[in-house]
Image (cartoon, rainbow, N blue to C red; front, side, top):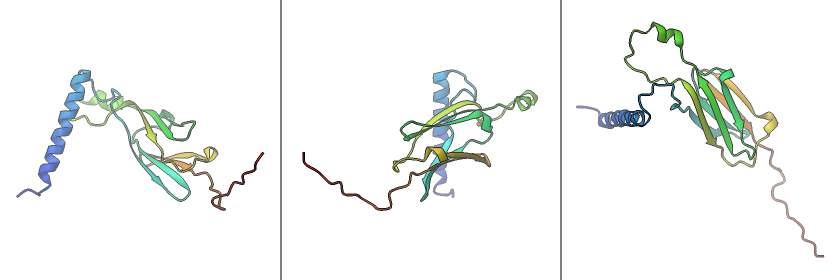
Length: 152
């Protein structure tokens, strides 16, 4: 007997195929690389920073742009995953194409942590991921402060 979750996986795969076919029917017979790819991201917080981990295997650092919005609430990710033209020219036929190439763009909302130290924001590429570290602004260690009120 099948694993009790196998039917869920099969339904999930069928739904993905139907969704892909629906998108393709709306936009015509566009091939991968038509801008439909959006990189996956993880966002997590440490004591010192917020980290955005972008899954972008095959994207060269020179083909990626990262922009922190003026209000520090969003990170805009824009880039291009280049096509391997040499491999495509040698291919006789494709049996499956799932790795999208071409331009992509994504804006992610950042958690509200009281602001970021813009001078220390950094990004590093490692193993197909881009790790963007947004150091938090220091919080006043004295805690809340009473504000005196004077009368005129």
